[in-house]
Image 1 (tube, rainbow, N blue to C red):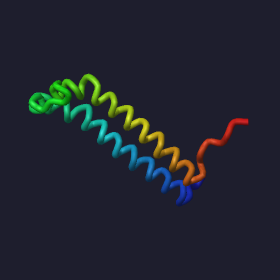
Image 2: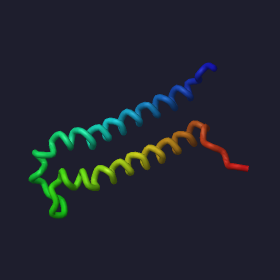
Image 3: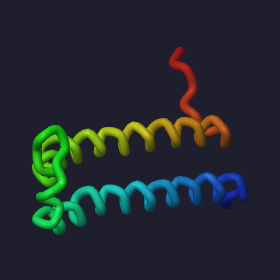
Image 4: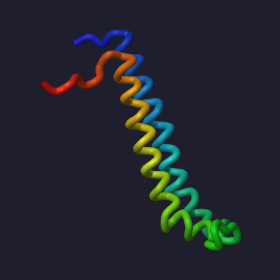
Length: 88
């Protein structure tokens, strides 16, 4: 099957948003963890920033990343005409 320009554009956008969100995940998971000792002086609601990110902040941001990806790809599906149809 030969890919059309429309298909190539769809997959280019999919790979771009996946790379951006993967980079955000990497920063949330590894970079903040690496600098946890240096961020210990920053407090949020009375707790050190590293504790806050480990206990709830990073988990909430993971859910935001997943939700944004689902919303963005549903929008791209509609734009490119590949959305799922209604069940009959």
